[in-house]
Image (cartoon, rainbow, N blue to C red):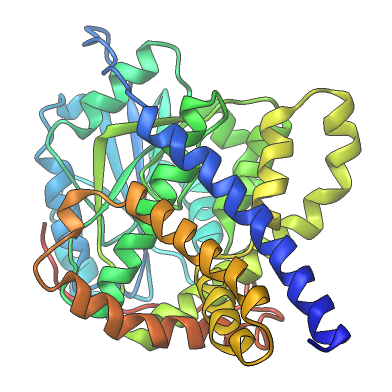
Amino acid sequence: MNIYLSIIDWALFTITACTILYMLYFAIGSLLYKHDRYPYAIKKARFLVLIPAYAEDKVIETTIMSLLDQNYAKRDYDIMVISDHMSEMTNFKLAQYPIHLALPKFPEGESSKAKALNFAMKNLPGLKHYDMVIVLDADNQVDEDFLEGMNNAFQAGIHIIQAHRVSKNINTSSALLDACFEEINNSIFRKGHVYWEYSASLVGSGIGFKYEWFRDNVTKVFTTGEDKEFEALLLRQGNYVEYLDDVKVYDEKTQKADNFNKQRRRWMAAQLAALRHNIKNLPMALLEHQYDYIDKVIQWMLIPRTLLMGIILVMCVVLPFFSGVAASKWYIMGAVVVFIYAMCLPDYLITPDFKYKFMKGVPNVMWGAVTNLFHLKGADKKFEHTEHSITTK
């Protein structure tokens, strides 16, 4: 085999193997994970639920109704919808609900969740006291015991909480793949991390923050990768993020391949930006034994899952033409990745048409992962709205 091809082969193999070993370690942890529910708490926290909603006219009412249906005293939580570029008719309908409605006037193309959250905190109703802020997406739905589950953890001394995001639709190939990657991440970056006593990773919604921390730090968040900015702030300050596998948030998955790839491009750009901004803190984090922060920076160095699959597939197809021996290690690596994914996927995703939808969607996802590499510049700063359908859990 050509020396240059051999160098490329071993360089890619080494980088890919590091990502896979990391995934395998925490995937094993996810199998061993067993989280006992926090005991029922008589004392009740006061919650502020923030819902940034950009042009989410189709789904926002369903989200509000699921929150109003909580078996938690209405006096103990407030809902604020940040209505950004929604129609006057939608705003009129929302005003009829017992919620607070914030109406920012962001210029077209300059909206973001970070801006919406900052706007909300500057426009809170009256002089009310809150114990915890919960951030949801406009397409999320929750079970009637959602706030009770968050309160039980809060009263047990847990101040930063990531709930379990679950797909409420797997009706297309893209939606199924999105749901699969979400649950793989739940297993590796949440359940597995908590088992090995590391902080769980944030995922963008279904997050509970201690009110005082959120109030003091939300002004430091600017980009469309706000969850990664929050993570860096939390872990640098020594906060622990708990994961509640039994407290679920139902999230709509993108149904079109184009939207799926745009979403991944934005996430890849946000990951690179987070790595670039935080890697300089690694030496001090090592000296201060901030292992959660160190783990997070390492996590941002990993190859994204869609790109990982693409690299392995290309090497498995190309290398046999040059060296069967060199290709064999990629076959083994591919088998290990399939094993990891099998460990991480929950039963509810394995439907009768799983194989068909999965195989149909994978080529588009892999091709999108490769093309995204050439369009990452500024993708974490450019707001791109993904339109939702009307989907209930």
